[in-house]
Amino acid sequence: SSVKCLHLPWESAAETELLALNPDIILGADIIYNPSCLPDLVRVLSTLLHQQKPPSRREDTNCPRKHPVAYITLVIRNAETFDRFLGLVKEASLATEDLTQPCQPLNLLPYMQSYD
Image (cartoon, rainbow, N blue to C red; front, side, top):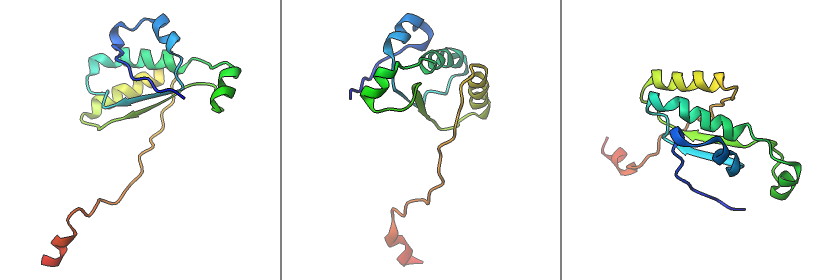
């Protein structure tokens, strides 16, 4: 029932600090771009995602999941960087799922068709 947005420097986040957060959902947007930061990012995600919520907390939030979930949105600008991220995620025993769905491009200029 509450949302928190925080600045979380991955390279300096202490495990005790991360464990105190106890999130249900983690959102990240466009955070996979620098290969040198990926080990710290995956360490933080792993620490946050491997926490198990106590049953009382699951009942309070009406959330059947025992563990938090992370949604990371990204544009693959460099395939090697993305592959490195996936490799580190696998090493950390985290699972990934591509939620991308194909969609039709928007017709933003429908009047242009009348000129053909």
